[in-house]
Every structure is written in structure tokens, then in C-alpha cells.
Length: 99
Image (cartoon, rainbow, N blue to C red; front, side, top):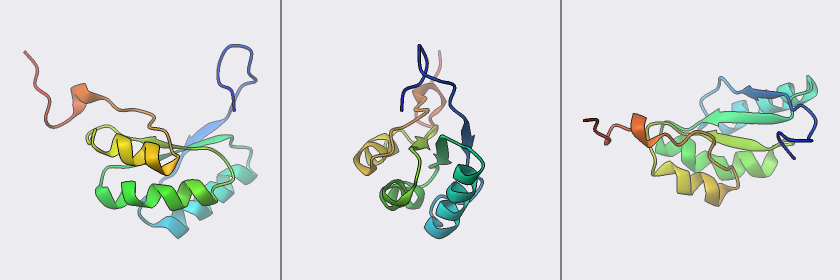
């Protein structure tokens, strides 16, 4: 799916379930897909959420993007799961410092 440039406008949404609850997350993705959603983001604030990505990405009808803010270590789990990371923001990670 192309985004930007000459690509058509894509509808994006984000689930409100715990990503680690694979069945609930997939159900919500199916509902979003039925309403015309093209891309879905899922939150990955915990290791359990990151571990659920592979199954979610495998069974989702639309592309799944992992929303990662505070745990940069989950970026690689998301990539391995086939759910590219949406927001890896090192400046907001708990381990970062500002001057």
C-alpha cells in the first residue's frame, strides 16, 4: 500500500484494545476494515504486546503498524513480526536524557 505522493488517500485508525489480547485486537481490526480502514496502528507499550504482533499481523486483513514510543527495544520485535514500527521516538524513551 502506497502512502503519500501520487497514492490515493488512506484511512488510518488505531485499536483501543490491549494489543496482547490478540482475539479482541483482531476483532477490532476486522470491524475497522469493514468500515473502510486501510491501515491500523496498535499500541506496543509492553513485551506482551510486542510478542502478540506476529499473530496479529499474520491474521489482519489490512497492514498493521506498531505504535512504539517508550520502548525502542520493541522496534525489532515489530519488524520481525511484519508490523513496521510507526513511532519510535528515542527522545521520549525513559532512558533518554535531555541537556
